[in-house]
Length: 270
Length: 282
Ligand SMILES: Nc1ncnc2c1ncn2[C@@H]1O[C@H](COP(=O)(O)OP(=O)(O)O)[C@@H](O)[C@H]1O
Ligand SMILES: [Mg+2]
Image 1 (cartoon, rainbow over the protein chains, first blue to last red):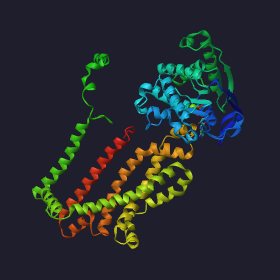
Image 2: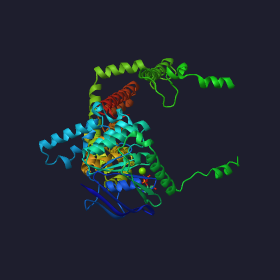
Image 3: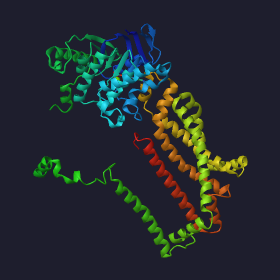
Image 4: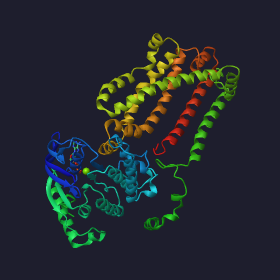
Protein backbone atom coordinates (compact mmCIF):
# COMPACT_ATOMS: atom_id res chain seq x y z
CA UNK A 1 0.00 0.00 0.00
CA UNK A 2 1.54 3.30 -1.09
CA UNK A 3 0.36 6.83 -0.65
CA UNK A 4 1.19 9.88 -2.70
CA UNK A 5 0.75 13.07 -0.74
CA UNK A 6 0.70 16.52 -2.33
CA UNK A 7 0.15 19.52 -0.12
CA UNK A 8 0.19 23.29 -0.75
CA UNK A 9 2.14 22.68 -3.91
CA UNK A 10 2.75 25.59 -6.23
CA UNK A 11 4.80 26.13 -9.34
CA UNK A 12 6.11 29.25 -11.04
CA UNK A 13 7.78 29.53 -14.42
CA UNK A 14 9.60 32.82 -13.76
CA UNK A 15 6.81 35.38 -13.43
CA UNK A 16 4.09 32.98 -14.57
CA UNK A 17 2.19 31.20 -11.84
CA UNK A 18 1.31 27.79 -13.26
CA UNK A 19 -0.01 26.05 -10.13
CA UNK A 20 -1.20 27.41 -6.80
CA UNK A 21 -1.77 25.59 -3.56
CA UNK A 22 -2.53 22.11 -4.89
CA UNK A 23 -3.61 19.42 -2.43
CA UNK A 24 -4.00 15.82 -3.53
CA UNK A 25 -3.78 12.36 -2.02
CA UNK A 26 -3.61 9.18 -4.04
CA UNK A 27 -3.52 5.61 -2.70
CA UNK A 28 -2.89 2.19 -4.17
CA UNK A 29 -5.98 0.95 -5.96
CA UNK A 30 -7.36 4.40 -6.64
CA UNK A 31 -7.96 5.90 -10.05
CA UNK A 32 -7.97 9.69 -10.14
CA UNK A 33 -8.56 11.73 -13.28
CA UNK A 34 -7.36 15.31 -13.67
CA UNK A 35 -9.47 17.40 -16.04
CA UNK A 36 -9.53 21.09 -16.88
CA UNK A 37 -9.27 23.63 -19.65
CA UNK A 38 -6.14 23.40 -21.76
CA UNK A 39 -3.26 25.30 -20.21
CA UNK A 40 -4.53 24.97 -16.64
CA UNK A 41 -1.44 23.07 -15.54
CA UNK A 42 -2.50 19.41 -15.71
CA UNK A 43 0.67 18.28 -17.43
CA UNK A 44 2.80 20.44 -15.19
CA UNK A 45 1.31 18.85 -12.07
CA UNK A 46 1.77 15.36 -13.46
CA UNK A 47 5.37 16.09 -14.46
CA UNK A 48 6.14 17.46 -11.01
CA UNK A 49 4.76 14.31 -9.44
CA UNK A 50 6.75 12.24 -11.94
CA UNK A 51 9.88 14.11 -10.88
CA UNK A 52 10.50 15.54 -14.35
CA UNK A 53 9.78 19.10 -13.22
CA UNK A 54 10.68 20.80 -9.95
CA UNK A 55 8.11 22.38 -7.67
CA UNK A 56 8.44 25.92 -6.36
CA UNK A 57 6.93 25.40 -2.92
CA UNK A 58 4.88 22.78 -1.11
CA UNK A 59 5.19 19.18 0.00
CA UNK A 60 5.36 16.19 -2.30
CA UNK A 61 5.86 12.81 -0.67
CA UNK A 62 5.51 9.12 -1.31
CA UNK A 63 4.93 7.22 1.93
CA UNK A 64 6.35 10.11 3.91
CA UNK A 65 9.52 10.45 1.81
CA UNK A 66 9.96 13.64 -0.23
CA UNK A 67 10.23 13.21 -4.00
CA UNK A 68 13.46 14.56 -5.42
CA UNK A 69 13.41 13.27 -8.99
CA UNK A 70 12.02 10.61 -11.27
CA UNK A 71 11.86 7.07 -10.01
CA UNK A 72 10.55 3.74 -11.21
CA UNK A 73 7.88 3.84 -8.49
CA UNK A 74 6.16 6.52 -10.62
CA UNK A 75 6.12 5.38 -14.25
CA UNK A 76 4.75 7.72 -16.89
CA UNK A 77 2.83 7.21 -20.12
CA UNK A 78 2.97 10.09 -22.58
CA UNK A 79 0.57 11.14 -25.30
CA UNK A 80 3.20 10.64 -28.02
CA UNK A 81 4.00 7.07 -26.84
CA UNK A 82 7.77 7.87 -26.81
CA UNK A 83 8.71 4.29 -27.64
CA UNK A 84 12.20 3.31 -28.69
CA UNK A 85 11.97 2.77 -32.45
CA UNK A 86 15.16 0.70 -32.59
CA UNK A 87 13.75 -1.92 -30.21
CA UNK A 88 11.08 -4.51 -30.94
CA UNK A 89 7.80 -4.49 -29.04
CA UNK A 90 9.04 -7.12 -26.58
CA UNK A 91 12.35 -5.29 -26.09
CA UNK A 92 10.53 -2.02 -25.46
CA UNK A 93 8.36 -3.69 -22.84
CA UNK A 94 11.43 -5.13 -21.12
CA UNK A 95 13.48 -1.92 -21.42
CA UNK A 96 13.56 -1.22 -17.69
CA UNK A 97 14.84 -4.72 -16.93
CA UNK A 98 18.10 -3.84 -18.65
CA UNK A 99 18.69 -0.95 -16.24
CA UNK A 100 21.09 -1.22 -13.33
CA UNK A 101 18.41 -0.56 -10.78
CA UNK A 102 16.74 -3.88 -11.67
CA UNK A 103 19.66 -6.00 -12.71
CA UNK A 104 21.79 -5.74 -9.60
CA UNK A 105 21.56 -8.68 -7.21
CA UNK A 106 18.99 -10.39 -9.30
CA UNK A 107 18.60 -14.06 -8.69
CA UNK A 108 17.73 -16.40 -11.53
CA UNK A 109 14.24 -16.92 -10.16
CA UNK A 110 13.68 -13.17 -10.27
CA UNK A 111 14.85 -13.11 -13.87
CA UNK A 112 12.41 -15.91 -14.66
CA UNK A 113 9.70 -13.91 -12.91
CA UNK A 114 10.45 -10.85 -14.97
CA UNK A 115 10.34 -12.78 -18.22
CA UNK A 116 7.06 -14.34 -17.17
CA UNK A 117 5.72 -10.91 -16.25
CA UNK A 118 6.71 -9.35 -19.55
CA UNK A 119 5.03 -12.20 -21.41
CA UNK A 120 1.91 -11.76 -19.31
CA UNK A 121 1.84 -8.05 -19.99
CA UNK A 122 2.36 -8.56 -23.72
CA UNK A 123 -0.52 -11.01 -23.57
CA UNK A 124 -2.76 -8.76 -21.49
CA UNK A 125 -2.15 -5.89 -23.89
CA UNK A 126 -2.95 -8.02 -26.92
CA UNK A 127 0.57 -7.62 -28.32
CA UNK A 128 1.51 -11.28 -28.73
CA UNK A 129 1.09 -11.21 -32.49
CA UNK A 130 3.35 -8.17 -32.91
CA UNK A 131 5.92 -8.86 -30.20
CA UNK A 132 8.80 -8.90 -32.69
CA UNK A 133 7.56 -5.95 -34.75
CA UNK A 134 9.03 -2.49 -34.41
CA UNK A 135 6.95 0.45 -33.15
CA UNK A 136 6.85 2.21 -36.53
CA UNK A 137 5.00 -0.78 -37.96
CA UNK A 138 2.18 -0.37 -35.43
CA UNK A 139 -0.93 1.79 -35.28
CA UNK A 140 -1.28 4.50 -32.64
CA UNK A 141 -3.46 2.34 -30.41
CA UNK A 142 -1.00 -0.55 -30.51
CA UNK A 143 1.90 1.79 -29.77
CA UNK A 144 0.17 3.12 -26.71
CA UNK A 145 -0.42 -0.44 -25.54
CA UNK A 146 3.32 -1.03 -25.77
CA UNK A 147 3.99 2.16 -23.80
CA UNK A 148 1.57 1.11 -21.06
CA UNK A 149 3.09 -2.37 -20.88
CA UNK A 150 6.55 -0.84 -20.70
CA UNK A 151 5.50 1.36 -17.79
CA UNK A 152 3.77 -1.53 -15.98
CA UNK A 153 6.88 -3.68 -16.37
CA UNK A 154 8.52 -1.44 -13.77
CA UNK A 155 5.77 -2.48 -11.32
CA UNK A 156 5.15 1.16 -10.44
CA UNK A 157 3.23 2.16 -7.35
CA UNK A 158 1.82 5.03 -9.36
CA UNK A 159 1.05 5.07 -13.04
CA UNK A 160 0.97 8.62 -14.35
CA UNK A 161 -0.72 9.08 -17.72
CA UNK A 162 -0.78 12.36 -19.63
CA UNK A 163 -3.59 12.35 -22.19
CA UNK A 164 -2.49 8.90 -23.31
CA UNK A 165 -5.36 8.43 -25.75
CA UNK A 166 -5.53 12.02 -27.01
CA UNK A 167 -4.27 11.06 -30.46
CA UNK A 168 -6.47 7.99 -30.95
CA UNK A 169 -9.78 7.67 -32.78
CA UNK A 170 -12.99 7.08 -30.82
CA UNK A 171 -13.27 3.34 -31.45
CA UNK A 172 -9.68 2.69 -30.45
CA UNK A 173 -10.12 4.85 -27.36
CA UNK A 174 -13.08 2.79 -26.19
CA UNK A 175 -11.05 -0.39 -26.48
CA UNK A 176 -8.19 1.27 -24.60
CA UNK A 177 -10.56 2.38 -21.83
CA UNK A 178 -11.64 -1.16 -21.16
CA UNK A 179 -8.03 -2.27 -21.33
CA UNK A 180 -7.06 0.29 -18.69
CA UNK A 181 -9.86 -0.94 -16.47
CA UNK A 182 -8.56 -4.50 -16.84
CA UNK A 183 -5.10 -3.28 -15.89
CA UNK A 184 -6.55 -1.54 -12.87
CA UNK A 185 -8.27 -4.76 -11.82
CA UNK A 186 -5.12 -6.86 -12.17
CA UNK A 187 -2.26 -4.56 -11.14
CA UNK A 188 -1.37 -3.16 -7.75
CA UNK A 189 -0.97 0.47 -8.78
CA UNK A 190 -2.60 3.81 -8.27
CA UNK A 191 -3.57 5.71 -11.40
CA UNK A 192 -3.32 9.43 -12.04
CA UNK A 193 -4.82 10.13 -15.43
CA UNK A 194 -4.76 13.51 -17.17
CA UNK A 195 -7.31 14.11 -19.89
CA UNK A 196 -9.41 16.86 -21.39
CA UNK A 197 -12.14 14.35 -22.25
CA UNK A 198 -14.73 14.40 -19.46
CA UNK A 199 -16.45 11.23 -20.66
CA UNK A 200 -13.16 9.37 -20.48
CA UNK A 201 -12.50 10.76 -17.00
CA UNK A 202 -15.92 9.78 -15.63
CA UNK A 203 -15.79 6.34 -17.21
CA UNK A 204 -12.36 5.45 -15.85
CA UNK A 205 -11.96 7.25 -12.55
CA UNK A 206 -13.14 6.82 -8.99
CA UNK A 207 -12.53 10.50 -8.46
CA UNK A 208 -12.37 13.38 -10.94
CA UNK A 209 -10.47 16.53 -10.01
CA UNK A 210 -11.28 19.69 -11.95
CA UNK A 211 -8.41 22.15 -12.23
CA UNK A 212 -9.13 25.81 -12.92
CA UNK A 213 -6.68 27.93 -14.88
CA UNK A 214 -4.82 31.19 -14.11
CA UNK A 215 -3.31 30.15 -11.82
CA UNK A 216 -3.83 26.38 -11.96
CA UNK A 217 -5.68 25.30 -8.82
CA UNK A 218 -8.11 22.65 -7.66
CA UNK A 219 -11.59 23.86 -8.51
CA UNK A 220 -13.65 20.88 -7.41
CA UNK A 221 -13.43 17.18 -6.65
CA UNK A 222 -16.08 14.75 -7.93
CA UNK A 223 -16.37 11.27 -6.45
CA UNK A 224 -17.71 8.97 -9.15
CA UNK A 225 -20.07 6.43 -7.70
CA UNK A 226 -21.23 4.40 -10.64
CA UNK A 227 -21.88 0.66 -11.05
CA UNK A 228 -19.40 -1.64 -12.78
CA UNK A 229 -18.08 -0.05 -15.95
CA UNK A 230 -19.45 -1.17 -19.25
CA UNK A 231 -19.61 0.77 -22.52
CA UNK A 232 -23.43 0.98 -22.24
CA UNK A 233 -22.98 2.85 -18.95
CA UNK A 234 -22.10 5.92 -21.03
CA UNK A 235 -25.75 6.14 -22.16
CA UNK A 236 -27.31 6.01 -18.70
CA UNK A 237 -28.87 9.17 -17.21
CA UNK A 238 -26.59 9.07 -14.14
CA UNK A 239 -23.48 8.98 -16.31
CA UNK A 240 -24.69 11.72 -18.62
CA UNK A 241 -25.72 13.83 -15.68
CA UNK A 242 -22.35 13.84 -13.96
CA UNK A 243 -20.57 14.27 -17.28
CA UNK A 244 -22.74 17.33 -17.97
CA UNK A 245 -22.07 18.82 -14.54
CA UNK A 246 -18.30 18.42 -14.77
CA UNK A 247 -18.26 19.78 -18.31
CA UNK A 248 -20.24 22.83 -17.19
CA UNK A 249 -17.85 23.31 -14.30
CA UNK A 250 -14.84 23.29 -16.64
CA UNK A 251 -16.62 25.70 -18.96
CA UNK A 252 -17.30 28.03 -16.03
CA UNK A 253 -13.67 27.98 -14.86
CA UNK A 254 -12.28 28.64 -18.30
CA UNK A 255 -14.44 31.73 -18.84
CA UNK A 256 -14.77 30.84 -22.51
CA UNK A 257 -17.94 31.26 -24.47
CA UNK A 258 -19.05 32.12 -27.97
CA UNK A 259 -21.09 35.30 -28.24
CA UNK A 260 -23.39 35.07 -31.25
CA UNK A 261 -24.65 38.64 -30.89
CA UNK A 262 -21.14 40.05 -30.89
CA UNK A 263 -20.19 37.98 -33.94
CA UNK A 264 -23.29 39.15 -35.78
CA UNK A 265 -22.49 42.75 -34.92
CA UNK A 266 -18.98 42.19 -36.28
CA UNK A 267 -20.21 40.81 -39.59
CA UNK A 268 -22.55 43.72 -40.13
CA UNK A 269 -25.61 42.58 -38.22
CA UNK A 270 -26.87 39.88 -40.63
CA UNK B 1 -20.78 25.32 -66.05
CA UNK B 2 -23.28 24.07 -63.51
CA UNK B 3 -23.55 20.58 -65.01
CA UNK B 4 -19.79 20.11 -65.35
CA UNK B 5 -19.39 20.75 -61.65
CA UNK B 6 -22.22 18.39 -60.84
CA UNK B 7 -20.50 15.69 -62.85
CA UNK B 8 -17.07 16.05 -61.35
CA UNK B 9 -18.52 15.84 -57.88
CA UNK B 10 -20.69 12.78 -58.39
CA UNK B 11 -18.11 10.75 -60.29
CA UNK B 12 -16.98 7.84 -58.12
CA UNK B 13 -13.21 7.83 -57.61
CA UNK B 14 -12.77 4.56 -59.49
CA UNK B 15 -13.70 6.25 -62.75
CA UNK B 16 -10.87 8.79 -62.42
CA UNK B 17 -8.03 6.64 -63.72
CA UNK B 18 -5.41 9.39 -63.54
CA UNK B 19 -5.79 9.46 -59.78
CA UNK B 20 -5.08 5.78 -59.50
CA UNK B 21 -2.71 4.31 -61.99
CA UNK B 22 -0.44 7.01 -63.24
CA UNK B 23 2.39 8.10 -60.97
CA UNK B 24 2.11 11.82 -60.22
CA UNK B 25 5.60 12.73 -61.45
CA UNK B 26 5.25 16.43 -60.89
CA UNK B 27 3.56 16.46 -57.51
CA UNK B 28 5.52 18.29 -54.85
CA UNK B 29 7.16 15.57 -52.75
CA UNK B 30 5.49 13.03 -55.03
CA UNK B 31 6.85 9.50 -55.41
CA UNK B 32 8.30 7.85 -58.44
CA UNK B 33 9.32 4.23 -58.72
CA UNK B 34 12.91 3.20 -58.25
CA UNK B 35 13.57 2.11 -61.83
CA UNK B 36 12.39 5.40 -63.25
CA UNK B 37 14.58 7.25 -60.75
CA UNK B 38 17.62 5.23 -61.79
CA UNK B 39 16.80 5.81 -65.44
CA UNK B 40 16.65 9.58 -65.00
CA UNK B 41 19.90 9.52 -63.00
CA UNK B 42 21.62 7.47 -65.71
CA UNK B 43 20.34 9.89 -68.33
CA UNK B 44 22.03 12.81 -66.59
CA UNK B 45 25.40 11.05 -66.66
CA UNK B 46 24.97 10.03 -70.30
CA UNK B 47 23.97 13.58 -71.20
CA UNK B 48 27.09 14.97 -69.55
CA UNK B 49 29.25 12.40 -71.33
CA UNK B 50 27.56 13.15 -74.66
CA UNK B 51 28.03 16.87 -74.21
CA UNK B 52 31.67 16.37 -73.39
CA UNK B 53 32.20 14.10 -76.39
CA UNK B 54 30.28 16.47 -78.68
CA UNK B 55 32.30 19.51 -77.72
CA UNK B 56 35.68 17.80 -77.95
CA UNK B 57 34.80 16.04 -81.24
CA UNK B 58 33.62 19.29 -82.83
CA UNK B 59 37.13 20.66 -82.43
CA UNK B 60 35.95 23.99 -81.07
CA UNK B 61 38.16 23.57 -78.02
CA UNK B 62 41.87 22.79 -78.10
CA UNK B 63 42.36 19.18 -76.78
CA UNK B 64 45.02 20.61 -74.49
CA UNK B 65 42.19 22.29 -72.56
CA UNK B 66 39.54 19.65 -73.09
CA UNK B 67 40.68 16.17 -74.08
CA UNK B 68 37.98 13.88 -75.44
CA UNK B 69 36.53 10.92 -73.52
CA UNK B 70 38.55 8.53 -75.68
CA UNK B 71 41.87 10.14 -74.79
CA UNK B 72 40.95 10.20 -71.13
CA UNK B 73 39.97 6.52 -71.20
CA UNK B 74 43.26 5.67 -72.89
CA UNK B 75 45.17 7.61 -70.26
CA UNK B 76 43.22 5.77 -67.55
CA UNK B 77 44.19 2.39 -69.00
CA UNK B 78 47.86 3.24 -69.33
CA UNK B 79 47.98 4.83 -65.88
CA UNK B 80 46.33 1.74 -64.45
CA UNK B 81 48.50 -0.87 -66.18
CA UNK B 82 51.80 0.80 -67.06
CA UNK B 83 52.06 3.21 -64.17
CA UNK B 84 50.81 3.07 -60.61
CA UNK B 85 47.25 4.35 -60.46
CA UNK B 86 46.37 1.69 -57.88
CA UNK B 87 49.27 2.74 -55.75
CA UNK B 88 48.33 6.43 -55.95
CA UNK B 89 44.72 5.58 -55.15
CA UNK B 90 45.73 3.32 -52.29
CA UNK B 91 47.86 5.91 -50.57
CA UNK B 92 45.12 8.54 -50.96
CA UNK B 93 42.50 6.18 -49.59
CA UNK B 94 44.74 5.40 -46.64
CA UNK B 95 45.17 9.11 -45.82
CA UNK B 96 41.48 9.87 -46.13
CA UNK B 97 40.44 7.01 -43.90
CA UNK B 98 43.19 7.65 -41.36
CA UNK B 99 42.36 11.36 -41.05
CA UNK B 100 38.65 10.78 -41.15
CA UNK B 101 38.84 7.85 -38.73
CA UNK B 102 40.84 9.91 -36.26
CA UNK B 103 38.24 12.68 -36.47
CA UNK B 104 35.36 10.27 -36.03
CA UNK B 105 36.88 8.47 -33.06
CA UNK B 106 37.27 11.79 -31.28
CA UNK B 107 34.14 13.54 -32.52
CA UNK B 108 31.55 10.86 -31.71
CA UNK B 109 32.13 10.79 -27.93
CA UNK B 110 32.67 14.54 -27.71
CA UNK B 111 29.55 15.30 -29.75
CA UNK B 112 27.57 12.83 -27.66
CA UNK B 113 28.54 14.48 -24.38
CA UNK B 114 28.02 18.00 -25.76
CA UNK B 115 24.53 16.93 -26.80
CA UNK B 116 23.91 15.33 -23.42
CA UNK B 117 25.26 17.76 -20.82
CA UNK B 118 24.90 21.54 -20.91
CA UNK B 119 28.17 22.29 -19.05
CA UNK B 120 30.10 20.26 -21.62
CA UNK B 121 28.25 22.16 -24.34
CA UNK B 122 29.07 25.52 -22.75
CA UNK B 123 32.75 24.56 -22.57
CA UNK B 124 33.19 23.14 -26.06
CA UNK B 125 30.54 24.48 -28.39
CA UNK B 126 31.69 28.12 -28.74
CA UNK B 127 35.25 26.85 -29.10
CA UNK B 128 34.20 24.48 -31.87
CA UNK B 129 32.14 27.16 -33.60
CA UNK B 130 35.21 29.39 -33.59
CA UNK B 131 37.54 26.67 -34.81
CA UNK B 132 35.13 25.72 -37.56
CA UNK B 133 35.60 29.12 -39.17
CA UNK B 134 39.37 28.93 -39.13
CA UNK B 135 40.25 28.13 -42.75
CA UNK B 136 41.70 24.64 -42.68
CA UNK B 137 43.76 25.29 -45.81
CA UNK B 138 45.52 28.20 -44.13
CA UNK B 139 46.89 25.72 -41.61
CA UNK B 140 49.02 24.03 -44.25
CA UNK B 141 52.17 26.05 -43.52
CA UNK B 142 51.76 25.41 -39.79
CA UNK B 143 51.04 21.74 -40.26
CA UNK B 144 54.11 21.36 -42.46
CA UNK B 145 56.16 23.19 -39.88
CA UNK B 146 54.91 20.90 -37.11
CA UNK B 147 54.51 17.59 -38.91
CA UNK B 148 56.85 17.91 -41.88
CA UNK B 149 55.70 16.49 -45.19
CA UNK B 150 55.27 12.95 -43.89
CA UNK B 151 51.92 11.21 -43.59
CA UNK B 152 51.26 13.16 -40.38
CA UNK B 153 50.76 16.45 -42.18
CA UNK B 154 48.14 15.10 -44.60
CA UNK B 155 46.26 13.32 -41.84
CA UNK B 156 46.42 16.42 -39.61
CA UNK B 157 44.99 18.62 -42.36
CA UNK B 158 42.10 16.25 -42.97
CA UNK B 159 41.53 16.16 -39.23
CA UNK B 160 41.45 19.98 -39.03
CA UNK B 161 39.08 20.12 -41.97
CA UNK B 162 36.59 17.57 -40.65
CA UNK B 163 36.79 17.33 -36.86
CA UNK B 164 35.11 20.60 -35.84
CA UNK B 165 32.29 20.21 -38.33
CA UNK B 166 31.78 16.66 -37.21
CA UNK B 167 31.59 17.53 -33.51
CA UNK B 168 29.01 20.26 -34.12
CA UNK B 169 26.90 18.12 -36.42
CA UNK B 170 26.99 15.12 -34.06
CA UNK B 171 26.09 17.23 -31.03
CA UNK B 172 23.17 18.53 -33.06
CA UNK B 173 22.14 14.96 -33.97
CA UNK B 174 22.15 14.10 -30.26
CA UNK B 175 20.21 17.25 -29.31
CA UNK B 176 17.46 16.18 -31.67
CA UNK B 177 16.67 13.01 -29.75
CA UNK B 178 13.08 13.59 -28.60
CA UNK B 179 12.91 14.74 -24.98
CA UNK B 180 10.09 12.28 -24.35
CA UNK B 181 12.39 9.32 -25.10
CA UNK B 182 14.76 10.64 -22.44
CA UNK B 183 11.99 11.31 -19.94
CA UNK B 184 10.44 7.88 -20.45
CA UNK B 185 13.79 6.30 -19.55
CA UNK B 186 14.18 8.50 -16.49
CA UNK B 187 10.73 7.60 -15.16
CA UNK B 188 11.65 3.94 -15.60
CA UNK B 189 14.64 4.46 -13.31
CA UNK B 190 17.49 5.03 -15.78
CA UNK B 191 20.56 6.85 -14.48
CA UNK B 192 22.17 9.68 -16.45
CA UNK B 193 24.83 7.35 -17.82
CA UNK B 194 22.16 4.89 -18.88
CA UNK B 195 20.19 7.64 -20.60
CA UNK B 196 23.31 8.68 -22.53
CA UNK B 197 24.23 5.18 -23.65
CA UNK B 198 20.91 3.40 -23.94
CA UNK B 199 18.81 6.26 -25.29
CA UNK B 200 20.80 9.20 -26.69
CA UNK B 201 23.46 7.18 -28.48
CA UNK B 202 21.08 4.51 -29.75
CA UNK B 203 18.46 6.99 -30.85
CA UNK B 204 20.93 9.32 -32.60
CA UNK B 205 22.97 6.53 -34.19
CA UNK B 206 21.38 6.68 -37.67
CA UNK B 207 21.78 10.46 -37.78
CA UNK B 208 25.39 10.21 -36.59
CA UNK B 209 26.07 7.64 -39.29
CA UNK B 210 24.70 10.08 -41.87
CA UNK B 211 26.88 12.85 -40.48
CA UNK B 212 29.92 10.63 -40.90
CA UNK B 213 28.90 9.84 -44.47
CA UNK B 214 28.64 13.55 -45.26
CA UNK B 215 31.92 14.53 -43.61
CA UNK B 216 33.74 11.78 -45.48
CA UNK B 217 33.10 13.93 -48.54
CA UNK B 218 34.83 16.91 -46.87
CA UNK B 219 37.79 14.66 -46.07
CA UNK B 220 38.42 14.03 -49.79
CA UNK B 221 38.50 17.76 -50.49
CA UNK B 222 41.15 18.37 -47.83
CA UNK B 223 43.11 15.33 -48.94
CA UNK B 224 43.52 16.69 -52.45
CA UNK B 225 44.54 20.09 -51.13
CA UNK B 226 47.11 18.49 -48.82
CA UNK B 227 48.49 16.26 -51.54
CA UNK B 228 48.86 19.19 -53.90
CA UNK B 229 51.06 21.16 -51.56
CA UNK B 230 52.70 18.69 -49.25
CA UNK B 231 53.16 15.30 -50.84
CA UNK B 232 55.06 13.29 -53.38
CA UNK B 233 52.46 10.57 -53.86
CA UNK B 234 48.73 10.16 -54.09
CA UNK B 235 46.01 11.24 -56.51
CA UNK B 236 46.21 14.94 -55.62
CA UNK B 237 49.94 14.90 -56.19
CA UNK B 238 49.47 13.10 -59.51
CA UNK B 239 46.95 15.72 -60.63
CA UNK B 240 49.37 18.53 -59.81
CA UNK B 241 52.23 16.75 -61.61
CA UNK B 242 50.02 16.26 -64.65
CA UNK B 243 49.34 19.99 -64.73
CA UNK B 244 53.08 20.70 -64.72
CA UNK B 245 53.55 18.48 -67.75
CA UNK B 246 50.36 19.67 -69.45
CA UNK B 247 48.86 16.15 -69.40
CA UNK B 248 45.27 17.39 -69.25
CA UNK B 249 43.77 13.93 -69.76
CA UNK B 250 45.63 12.74 -66.66
CA UNK B 251 44.06 15.57 -64.65
CA UNK B 252 40.69 14.37 -65.89
CA UNK B 253 41.42 10.77 -64.90
CA UNK B 254 42.50 11.85 -61.41
CA UNK B 255 39.37 13.92 -60.88
CA UNK B 256 37.06 11.23 -62.22
CA UNK B 257 38.68 8.50 -60.13
CA UNK B 258 38.14 10.59 -56.98
CA UNK B 259 34.56 11.27 -58.03
CA UNK B 260 33.85 7.59 -58.63
CA UNK B 261 35.41 6.54 -55.32
CA UNK B 262 33.25 9.16 -53.59
CA UNK B 263 30.09 8.00 -55.32
CA UNK B 264 30.77 4.34 -54.60
CA UNK B 265 31.57 4.88 -50.89
CA UNK B 266 28.52 7.12 -50.50
CA UNK B 267 26.19 4.57 -52.07
CA UNK B 268 27.76 1.77 -50.05
CA UNK B 269 27.31 3.70 -46.81
CA UNK B 270 23.69 4.44 -47.68
CA UNK B 271 23.15 0.74 -48.20
CA UNK B 272 24.86 -0.12 -44.91
CA UNK B 273 22.67 2.51 -43.23
CA UNK B 274 19.53 0.83 -44.48
CA UNK B 275 20.77 -2.56 -43.29
CA UNK B 276 21.92 -1.35 -39.87
CA UNK B 277 18.99 0.92 -39.10
CA UNK B 278 15.94 -0.49 -40.81
CA UNK B 279 13.75 1.37 -38.34
CA UNK B 280 15.08 4.82 -39.26
CA UNK B 281 13.49 6.65 -42.17
CA UNK B 282 15.90 8.53 -44.35
N1 LIG C 1 8.66 24.85 -19.11
C1 LIG C 1 7.74 25.84 -19.09
N2 LIG C 1 8.12 27.13 -19.07
C2 LIG C 1 7.21 28.13 -19.05
N3 LIG C 1 5.89 27.93 -19.03
C3 LIG C 1 5.43 26.68 -19.03
C4 LIG C 1 6.33 25.56 -19.08
N4 LIG C 1 5.59 24.43 -19.08
C5 LIG C 1 4.30 24.81 -19.05
N5 LIG C 1 4.21 26.16 -19.02
C6 LIG C 1 2.95 26.93 -18.95
O1 LIG C 1 2.19 26.46 -17.87
C7 LIG C 1 0.83 26.42 -18.21
C8 LIG C 1 0.27 25.05 -17.94
O2 LIG C 1 0.78 24.17 -18.92
P1 LIG C 1 0.38 22.63 -18.96
O3 LIG C 1 0.68 22.03 -17.64
O4 LIG C 1 1.04 22.04 -20.15
O5 LIG C 1 -1.19 22.72 -19.20
P2 LIG C 1 -2.22 21.56 -19.59
O6 LIG C 1 -1.49 20.28 -19.60
O7 LIG C 1 -3.29 21.64 -18.56
O8 LIG C 1 -2.76 21.91 -20.93
C9 LIG C 1 0.70 26.85 -19.65
O9 LIG C 1 0.29 28.19 -19.69
C10 LIG C 1 2.09 26.70 -20.18
O10 LIG C 1 2.33 27.67 -21.17
MG1 LIG D 1 -1.07 18.91 -21.20
